[in-house]
Structures are given as structure tokens and as C-alpha cells.
Length: 152
Image 1 (cartoon, rainbow, N blue to C red):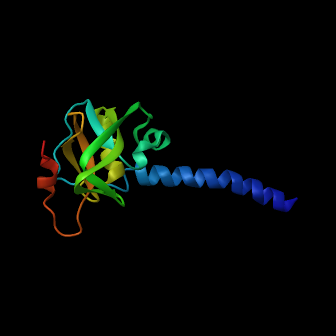
Image 2: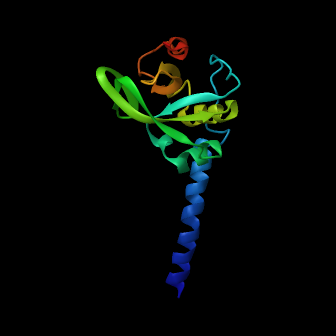
Image 3: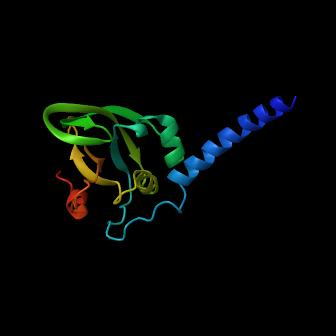
């Protein structure tokens, strides 16, 4: 009987612990301070090319507060390497485009740890649309301002 009580307690505690961890790492004001050198987010809408965890509707719902609609898209001249995209002429990365508000873009920036772990750069998709893409910051001292300007 006591074993059943522990099992039930564990079944309740585990989802609560996961939800707390997700909130703390993705939404909490305690785990990310937007670097001062980053420009303010302009009013939306913003098109964002996602190629990793943000392709998953439940992850977008947790991060942005809604899953949002997405549509398939292709970024040419890159390949996916781990958690990043690297330039690779002749190759392409399949992903999705989501359209977000300024507030939602700030939430995505928090999730990606903009200016600390990732830069948000402007790229042009195969279909000609201009979108934001998150790219990993290099370990060496890369000029974040250069990455934030984009090349579109």
C-alpha cells in the first residue's frame, strides 16, 4: 500500500517538476537578461525560419503561449550541423516559417538566449521571403552587431 502511495506521488511530482523546469528555463525572468547592446524588437509581424525544436508545436506553445501556424520552407546554401546552420553551397535545410508578434519574437529570443547563445540574423528563403533565423554564436569573439545586421 505504501509503495502505491509513493508511485502516485511520483506520478504527480514528475510532471510538476518538468513544468517548473520548462518555465524556469524558457519563460522565467531569472535565467536570461537581454544584453544591452541588442537592438529593440520592432513591432511585428515577424517571419521566423525554425529548423530545430521550434518546429514542434508543443514547444512553440510553451515558449510563445500559442503553437501558431507554420508552413514548410527551405533555406538554401546551408546545412544543419548540431544546433546550428553552417554555410554549405549547394545544400539546403528544410524547416518551417512561423509568423509572430513583437512580444512573441522576444519570447523566442529568450528561449534561444539571444546575444548569449544565438544571434538572430536575416536571411532570404528559396521562395524569396525574408525571415529571421537563429544562428549559434561562435566560441571565439564574433561581432554580434555584424551577425544582427543580416545579409538580406
